[in-house]
Length: 406
Image (cartoon, rainbow, N blue to C red; front, side, top):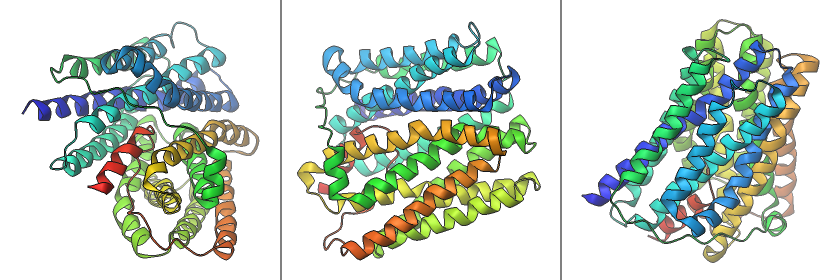
């Protein structure tokens, strides 16, 4: 019973964390527009968030090893709270970019603590149910966070204070649990070049996933604002994409286990290109039409990370799987860091449709590269099972590795 209460506390902490960190991105976009930031400056905020996330993924295991899980979680959550509270104090794109680095550190660090805790405490009997609950909570809270901008006033002390309160509140469930802290996790070695040699298409796929996901999540509110959506409609627009991505995991997972994963990646990218063209041509239609196209965008783009990771794992051994997934996260971060800045610059020069033109070009490159890789070598003789990858920290690789063994 104490173990189940501990898991409930961890899931509650994740919910509060997602409500805070998930809402600050679209709120920053709308606040930046109100304060007169350029589109490129707003894109810089999104890139800064992923820079912080990138740093946090590799710093957090070392901090956990120094001060323990609960204290490390409190440190990272405090960074998120400080980042939110300081927004209304000093208004400026460069200052806010630094504050978004703190928010990225918060997300990466807190998720690493939670996933390390799960890894140490899960047993064979409850692993599947707890991981399923973790995925549902992660997606549901993230989708709900997008809709919060309907009542969060841009550039308001109250709005950022609410997010700071949520960041502080996420500390309470985890630190108040009486469950013993797990052993310190070991940090994986990082071998991105070796990973690229092992699975060139897997690396290309996660880079494109980073480009499309980060560009949309961080610059999507600008697109919504420029095509005339209200604040509540922008929140629904963003949430619909996440819901579509969650729904897609089950049918895409079936296809990725049944057919050649390279074909699955190619068809997903072709479908993504088609949806991007629709959003480019018919973005000014009725909001319900925009929501429908946004759901299709999530259906086609969000599973690409998981399919690419599964394809890469087909060409490695169980002993090297955690290191490979850490390297894939590194490659995902590279794409995610630069995408918002590039996409926002293109929107500033060519209008809102440039966002989806940019994403479609990335997917077109993946289609061409995937076709070339199919000619270069056959598919793996023995394949790993498809697993939904939430793109949080490398710790999820350890969890899924253990689940596969069991």
